Image (cartoon, rainbow, N blue to C red; front, side, top):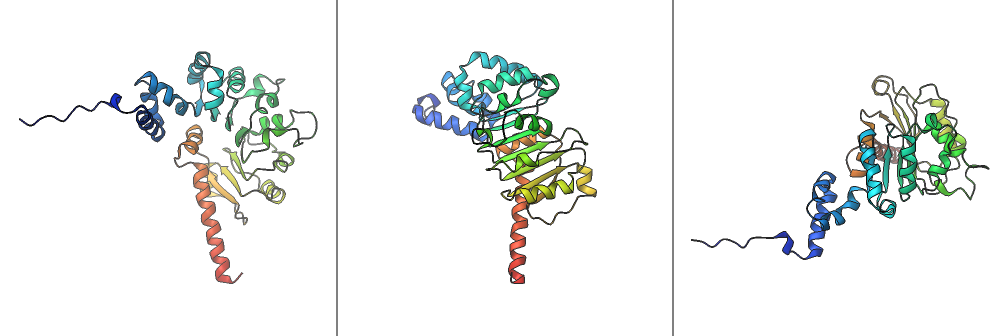
Length: 288
């Protein structure tokens, strides 16, 4: 009778190799990460930072996350939470506490209806301590954020936007006058701007003003109503402008931008680079 091969025990592997295997598995699939933390206390310690690197909160999971805030040191969240989506379902007071703890956030989607509930509260005090690279925010809340500090917006002592590379402005109402051009020109690091209007299209005159005033922009993404995109899309000559249909699942679309899955921004960048390449080829053929 042939002898049986020796039984392989994961626990017999060197600790460093155990950690590497679990770490890579969790990075490959965040859903697996949630299961892997249950393997052992060591696995929980190794993988928890991956789970909390990106946090998306709605009405149900906010309650659970608030309990988790009480169960771990504040420093854990400050170090590990880098991408945070606070949906419209999150209560403003909960948003205040979450942002007070998650001070290391670099990418923030702030879709909380903060001003309706707390009109006299300071949105500037809430968000300005963060050193953001990416921000998605409703247009009236952007007004409140930029007006929150006495003095001129964009002054040297106003650092929250100093490293802001990407700004996505969301329009909850169709009849809003943007009125944000003066802010955009002060964002010295801004290279990607998105205007998200699920009700229709973005005013072409406003787009032209942005392109003229914000020469540092690499790409201006216009995310418009799906029917408008399909049947009556506006035409722009500037290659920096890319049109995309408004996604059916906005939260999943935001998450996909941090998990490497196709999303509105990644598809827009593909179109942008294809347009730039085609333009260069055309200029080369014409001898320009």
